[in-house]
Length: 223
Image 1 (spheres, rainbow, N blue to C red):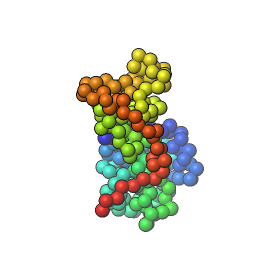
Image 2: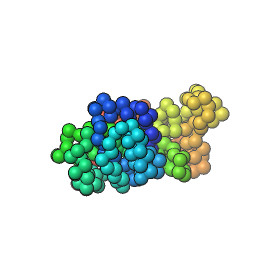
Image 3: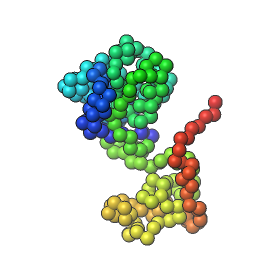
Image 4: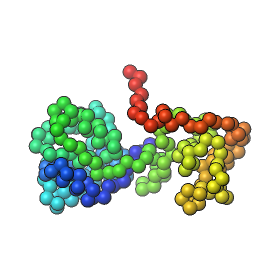
């Protein structure tokens, strides 16, 4: 699984930095998911280093962390650049939104005054076909239906996240959302259950989805 990110427009990033009157920057780049998406990694850090200096910012240092979203790893990596953090006006994170928030949490003890900015937009949890080709297959809804749907998620493959088969807008197996270019999720589910000999599950009546459990902060704590 990869958290898929895309690059923000550069001017949006510069505007955010300027709004905080940032002049001295530390770059923290993700060496895992963002590197795979070409929005981070070593190349991304070097690219942003050059761009920032061309714009007149002073880049104090850049680091590439294998797990920006892991507080334990981030704590260790930030300790290595304490001297630069003492001088920094801001941190530019080349990561997903999880990474940005992990950096902020790890700064709270010594540097709560340093703002953290993102150079990326976080899109979705992605299934990788190959480099540069990712697909959303899970939204992390917390109530997985895959056992009933042949392993195909209706929340992500159906544009309306319907629970009981396709809507009236389906035409020849294609979804009306997006000008009939994408497959209807429920047709995919039907075909898969047919292959498995379990079309009885297709007829199973499911109540409307309760979104109240997914629209707020969630956590999993087992230790």
